Image (cartoon, rainbow, N blue to C red; front, side, top):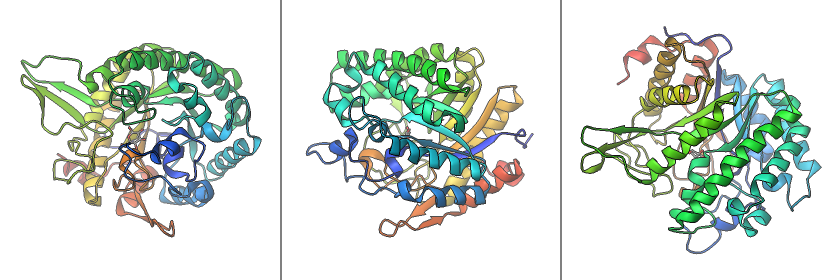
Length: 408
Ligand code: BGC
């Protein structure tokens, strides 16, 4: 089969901080300007999506997409504790209305890495009150926006929040080696997801889920599983899979695989937050292995581990300066999705990460994940061939046979 089912969602995924620009009230903005962090440059105006969202939505619709994943920013919606901004909520309502007007199903992320500064100042994810504060923000945001949302994602990649901020120190608050802190954060985000999902459901009848970071972990004969960062994350994913048994969907986000042999990690083995790398044929600009086939295993894992919760691929993508490589990557990833559908797995859609070349966190604007290039001075958008290619697949719901044959 090379046809996707009717109603299958084809979209791109973005996050608020990475594209909006001027997100000055968030902890990441402060982090980007602090000495001694790994950030190579500040986010600044990002892609000015905050003002250009309507043109971007029209562009996606014109290309053939029928879904769009974007984030709403807690730091704008609740700029000080307990003070909710009607203007910020209205802004997001206008984005949602534009999605509806252009027939893109809006998939909304409530939390994607960033926290309001006031919350980080009080302890951020470590704070005992953090789950309750997140629940309140989700309830308020859904009351204002819920009728226009198609899918609600609570927390983006919660598995890495403790590790990035407390073990590796590559995210705010920048602590290193604080194992107790990492586990405390993990317990807190688990509770936060559960409370937020219930709060969102109390305000709107929309599917709710969590979006997980799922590299494909592969162990060769003689390899022993251990406590390496990706393995710790994977154990945390298992705990979220348990919660996701009660959710309406599970978000799968896969970029690569991590292999282990008897001697330890094998092949390109990179975790998020490191340096921009020299891209090779078998690697990406992030130094990850080029391995689009990973998506098949992670969709199967999510489906099995949740006892059959519907799957939405909320992120799949590649950082590359070679656009034909991007097309080959997406084609191979989509072939995996088709194989999963053939096996009876309920996969609802595929969102490519990402629409625009954007702010890749501490790596700044170097990595090119986008289907669309962005002029860093004028913000002019220039769709790459991959944008029209994936748009045509979305419109026809057919993966071209030639593309399938050309894949590894
Ligand atoms: C994150 C994005 C990030 C992307 C590419 C994902 O893990 O959700 O924010 O830009 O990976 O590294």
